[in-house]
Image (cartoon, rainbow, N blue to C red; front, side):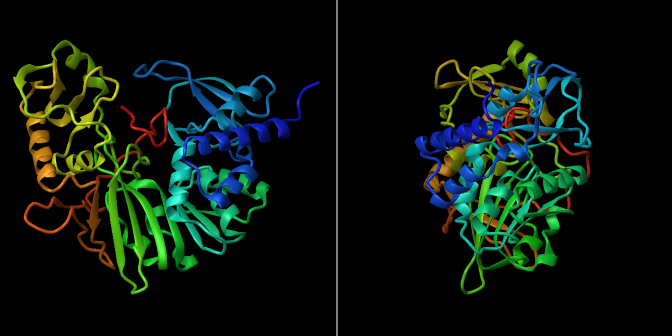
Length: 416
């Protein structure tokens, strides 16, 4: 006799929560209860699994149908693994999908992987009775968790993809949490709902949209990824509206971030890999050993002060490219040597940024000025002549292009 599906899903849900606690990720009691009580499998009834190797085009996929007995165990394992769940290919309609092999296309929506969801909601410090706005909720997993904490009819999401908005609302209704998804441009927020105590953006933006600031209630917290053209070194901005009705914002480098808003095309070093491997560059001495991956304050500064660079995280040694200038740098052999290629000395720019970062006191966080009603958003590591400073790029100059496909490993992972 087969096991009760609800029982097997519940057991996996409990195991997922135990892993998050054991890893030191999950510490909030209310969020723990939400994770245990919200059946995420209802929100993620199917999943794409990539079959072909990275870099192979067209991509070969397999669609798992959670209702099909041959797929159910693999699907349940994936849904509760903590990994991202791939849900939508090329903006397709989400009703009537057929399980089995699928050729071509790129993912345009997926769930956030578990640790990132927990970290974001804990940073927001959710509590009962708070009004919660999620921008770009996708299938609604974090929106459902937030609704379970805040209470019914207090959590709303704004999703620009019509099929995904309808899909999420249908599944959320099945849970009876009173969460709502409206179709619209996330950059506009949801002005019809007034002001919110907590705002969470599931998309990366170059700067904080004025509408989000306007809709943040006194004492409110706003969390978003700040994105540049590189997916390698994202930043996370936490803004609060103080009791004096002022905005205070702090920017920190993070190991991962959300995919960017529509219109952004991330730089990509994948197509350069064969050439870099064949011709890593001319060796020269360097005073900069490869900085550690967790020097997030440095890498965040590099994303802005040495723009147009992208790291290939699959390379054997640290490899950073400037695709627009057909240039790259490959660390080694040894700590005091680097190989450089092309008209742009990528490593020299990193040497300069690193030296400035050290003189500034090795900051791991930056203050951001977010004016009410719009205007330039200035970033600084502090005061004094040695402080690192830059201005966030505005929303308007981003050229309109087709939406960048989601990374196919993790919604919130580095994709290279």
